[in-house]
Image 1 (spheres, rainbow, N blue to C red):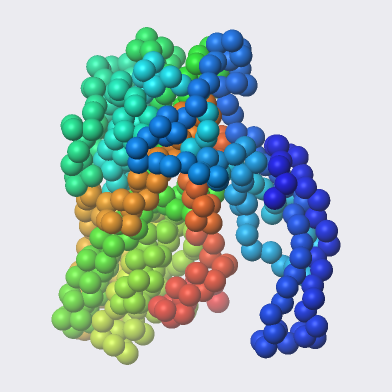
Image 2: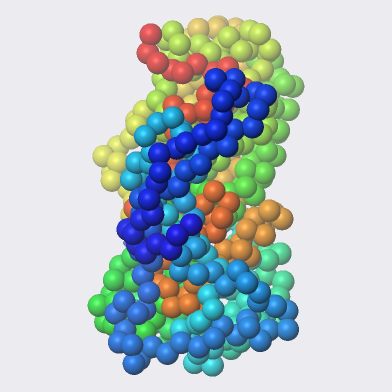
Length: 484
Ligand SMILES: Nc1ncnc2c1ncn2[C@@H]1O[C@H](COP(=O)(O)OP(=O)(O)OP(=O)(O)O)[C@@H](O)[C@H]1O
Ligand SMILES: O=P(O)(O)OC[C@H]1O[C@](O)(CO)[C@@H](O)[C@@H]1O
Ligand SMILES: [Mg+2]
């Protein structure tokens, strides 16, 4: 692909094809030639954008001299190496729309770095809720900064954003973090709230950190955008990156967030137990509540992989309990057919339907996230009352399983561990190259650097109109809960 700078473009010729197969594409190979235009390359902030040239020295990447690497042609990622956001196109339609041709700089080592490793002071912080793999990311950041780039001043900021101003950072080294990937949680501790912008940036400045690695979810990223803006306003020679973390998988643009797959795997145990309990009772219902504040990815993926689930309820969908086409009628039918049923509900589902006091409506956690009521307990109670009204003298057994923190308070599985490592390495390569205000993450399987602001504004919700949700419904055979 031709070199592009941000919003620069290469020209797209109209798709041309040598397929002479008149629509029958099953027997011959089709060769279609097209180029892409305009490629809108998202601007990746760099320290050069606001630090005067004389204050910013670059040097060859030390990987050049590493005994483990033999940089060859193509080893270093160039400025024109990009990743397309959308890779599925319809060649018969006019192409591309501006939205479909967005590209990001590819992640990976650059031939020159903008930090002298001997002068680098890196800070690592974890914010928000726990997520499998947090310790793996921390470990890999420490080990790779140390081994790949020769950085020796690496610090852990304790207990989230507040740690920048309320406690002493701890010095980290490869020996100390060696086995951290085997532990769930975050050894550095985490917290919600405590976001005091001036104090945080003062803390960064006072401790002379010049690289800040923030590991967190959507809330953390919104905070990180403010920190990035303040760092630029103060013209500090500090690179900041945010490694996307959330068990809910609600961060947009990237393929998925780390820890999500581990959480889905852990959720299987709860669903299996619910199935066993339901199957072993007369008119048994196994009800499982899974994490998912405003998105139902965990519930959806756990349902699809289990195949023992009769109905999955997520925040992105509406449903109703009573009447024709409602949840209870569906469950009643399943009990008639199979004498048991398993229901999986994401914690954020049906929140609008649960009666709550004015005080409960206003309740927020320290970060400002709404506090939910227990949808599982509410469903159990409503179902039990409904059954008693409609099925006098007939048994109903509802076993409610709420694994809550058990699906996230575990070490990452092998897939997530590998993912955490690649994220950490991508973050370091980008920061060492002087990029700042970015999020590393895979897009269509290729690691890219995405502007922090863009990721902070994005959201990954379940699309209940797409194939995956149709697949869920075909697996469970659940109704679409359209009022009839
Ligand atoms: N809009 C915002 N501006 C500044 N800081 C924010 C904002 N939203 C959240 N934060 C801060 O970011 C940190 C983490 O936020 P939050 O508790 O929402 O978790 P998160 O990063 O979304 O992760 P998760 O959803 O996985 O728990 C908190 O310290 C919170 O104060
Ligand atoms: O850790 P806390 O404050 O109890 O919050 C739990 C929330 O954190 C998450 O695990 C991640 O946002 C949500 O799924 C869940 O609602
Ligand atoms: Mg969040």
